[in-house]
Amino acid sequence: MVDHVTAGPRADPARPGSGLRALVVEDEPELAGLVASYLQRDGFEVAVVHDGQQAVDLAREVDPDVVVLDLGLPGLDGVEVCRRLRTFSDAYVVMLTARTDEVDTLIGLSVGADDYLTKPFSPRELVARIQAMLRRPRPIGSDREADAARVFGELAIDVAGRDVWLEGRTIALTRTEFDLLATLAQRPGMAFSRRQLIDAVWGPNWVGDEHLVDVHVGHLRHKLGDSATEGRYVRTVRGVGYRMGRGT
Ligand code: CA
Image (cartoon, rainbow, N blue to C red):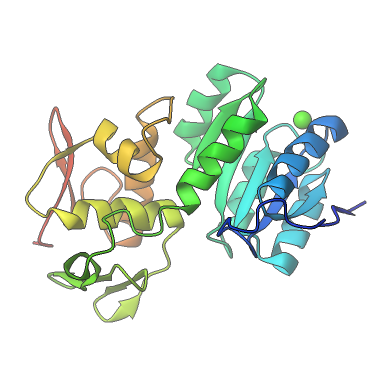
């Protein structure tokens, strides 16, 4: 069963988040309803499903901007849902887990979620994290110089348009992957620590395992034609973190 939460009059018409779609995938109806109501209050159009297969089907239909995804679901679990989602969607995915140690396992699995929250969590914090991420379409500010296209060898990044080309072909990045790349590209010579990258991409209030950055860098490197452990464009700086390379 699919519950479409009816959108009432918008509580805060000044909020710029209007028109954003969220999909809540959670088999505990009470929790699903709670998360949905917080998101709805925040201006999201919300759909709720209670199992994994419905989540994948509905995501194809509604093309959500945000997916809140429980790990433990009947049928397809959250890991498999996330893998399938990633074949067609760059939605911002927040995974809900029952135990802290599950997060480490998930980070190891590289399922492609953007963020993780351990139950019990505050729905207010969940919405704050989502809003922080969505408010950050340009992690490097909005001045004209920052918006200019940046070129690193065969790699071109159009920050304002959020497009990336490698050897003349468009590369499909998730929101998180793009923001990481754009942040690094902002200061090409500079080594960023994992914490600096988390502050820039996930926001300063993000709390969790900083190796989440490594997982997303691994995905990014793959898409840029490199191995997960070292890249021509996203270089490892030992003992520090990452910096942008020239592609050679
Ligand atoms: Ca569950």
